[in-house]
Length: 399
Image (cartoon, rainbow, N blue to C red; front, top):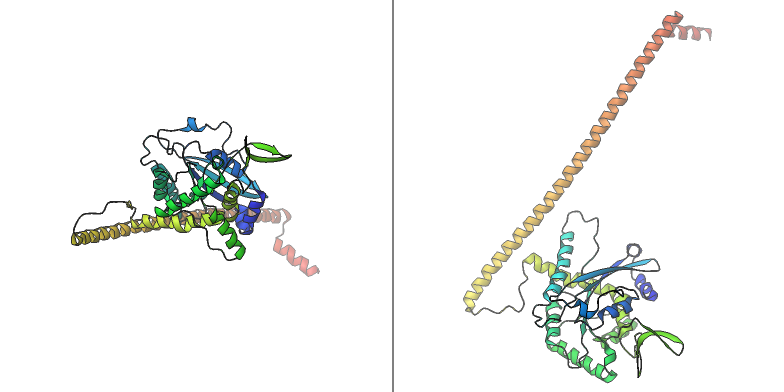
């Protein structure tokens, strides 16, 4: 893990946040054989995918799977809980229709889980944030632009998660081919109105300049390698070829360093903020409003007046459904609150009963001690033939 990266991130966070640590969920999507596992291991300098992890040919599934792995990265006392969401089987079938649906289902299930936790009456125990904060979408270095599957996937997902397109195995292209391929990808992204992650507006000139440099590199062309090679006595991470070495951490060779710095140094918090304030809020509004229709749903052929009447009825039904859901949520919260008050009342009653019994026991013990003292006094007076009061009176007279 880049020590300086977490130090930079520390500056932007409070002491309470530093003590608690951070959660970050990164999803990687792309066809098999594009070097996703190698890139993730290289990026975080950790064996997130160990040596015994199955190769691409062994991981090809008949259907798309969603698999998660969690790793705790720690530097300078700061904990980063990194969750990697992998999608083996994506794009590997002969018919890839709806292969994006398991990915959508997973992302929305995390939103649903967060929404349910947020709706509870007692939210003192904050659960880990398992929402997907970023999706790295790997594009094959074909040099011929985006495939139909690439376009369809990003169109389906761009309003649900932060998408960062990356060109895999950039060392298979010349610098000129890579630059041309980047332009072609960006043109097609704009043509199909795909919304990829937008860099935030910065205040300082330096931040604006750094943001522009990063934006100019999108889509980022990356090379991953877990191999250390030696050049002129210097050990570097890279891939060795007959014509030379492709250095992973050299910005002149690929955008690996820029991507890593963006994810864990400069834009980690913004990715989380956009997830929470934009994508999650959109999901929450759709959920509470009872929306969620397919944006590509075919339009009806009914006449305008009939269409308006139907839309009016649908709107009334949606409002009733929303009202019912809100009433159910309200009743649930009232029920939880009543149960909480009932539990508190029962606890107070138990404590009161315990204190009453304790007090009665103490009174009984004191009464028994008083009787014992009276009995002892009477026995003494009888044995000595004089009362305590008479003895006290004589003592005072002598004084």
